[in-house]
Image (cartoon, rainbow over all chains, first blue to last red; front, side, top):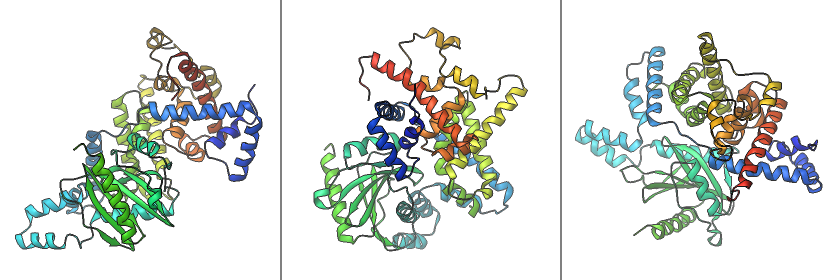
Amino acid sequence: MLCPESLRVQAYFDGQVDAVTAADIEGHMARCAECRALHQALEQLRTAMRQELPYAQTPPALRAQIMRALDKESATDTPQSQRRGRTTWRTRSFWVGATSGLGAAAIAATLAVLLFAPLLRTPVVDELVGAHVNSLLSTHLIDVVSTDRHTVKPWFAGHTDVSPVVADFDPQGYKLVGGRVDYLQHQRAAVVVYQHGQHVINVFSWAATQRSPPNNVTRNGYHLAFWKAGDLEYCAVSDTGWDELLGLVHLLQGLSARDAPE
Amino acid sequence: MDDRRRRFEVQVLPHLDAAYRFARWLAHSPDDADDLVQEAILRAYRGFDALRGSDVKAWLLTIVKNCHLTALKQQRRRGSVPLPDEHDAQDEQALIATGPDPESATISQDQERTLERLVSALPDPYREALILREIEDLDYREIAAVTNVPLGTVMSRLARARAALKKQWLQQVEGEPRAVP
């Protein structure tokens, strides 16, 4: 016969109860072997499902087809003639967009773009600051809570398009607290979350483009440090000082260099 | 690009993969899933102005589910596919009832019963609740909204789906010389 508390144990397992109820259920599980076994089985099943069931992504052809259907749909409800051109801009990454600008524009304008590119508001910087601030406001700071890189790194393999360097630098003052997925540059970017004193440092990573990464920049009080390692582009974002932020960057770069096959 | 389209891309399209995965579980074939997710995105775009709050993923998955039901009704009108059984009482008896279709009858019980196959064999309402919870990480309230049933039903469906899977899958794993992950 099923223990009458089983549904509450399930709700506890699913994180659907408040702290008081959680304590109550934990007390019950300490006494009830059946519910302990249930909780363990639920965990095994979840682990297996997340490992073995397909975690499919939209095929690129379908995504493109949907974007075209949306273009058509937008065209019928707003008759703005320049929309199509700007759509093209939007659907490409910033650097591809900048390159096509080079081809089209006059030389003077080209120089201006080259000279002022770091000063212009680049979409990727805006996206990163937005993602960083959002992670601090919402409950979406961490998807996988772990101080163990052997947990965080494989988790990314199933949930993102990239496999970044992950390590705990607790002795150096940068404690690994977990990982997260953010949608960035039209990709599922991996975010490794570090704690440095009272500050959160988000280290974003995504598949690199042909161009070199943007220069380090401060936007809205947040420092953004960019670098490239292997075929990934990284950006560390935080409101710590530059020295603290670059300290972590150097540790991570050292790690990438060591992991590199050469 | 107009502002509305831009907001749609920022707020809704990050959940395109979730919509696609859900569609793959709902639809009968990959082609149907493609049609389903495209139809759902277009419908979402048309109804985007009505979206309030931050529950975007659950909102989009609800639209996928509704599009799926519409498609089923159309197919049924054409007489090709029967509507799924919506009575829980019958589903409860049918939970992972093995071998109703000739394909699974020919497959030996000890092999080819991967977890995916077992999940696929769950009756639709149970599979949906389970996938939304375990794969898409929706909470009970969101699952209730997407599947249009009371919260208590979500809880009982999850419990029954998990109990059925646990029974079949854990037993099977224990019976093999393969460690539980």
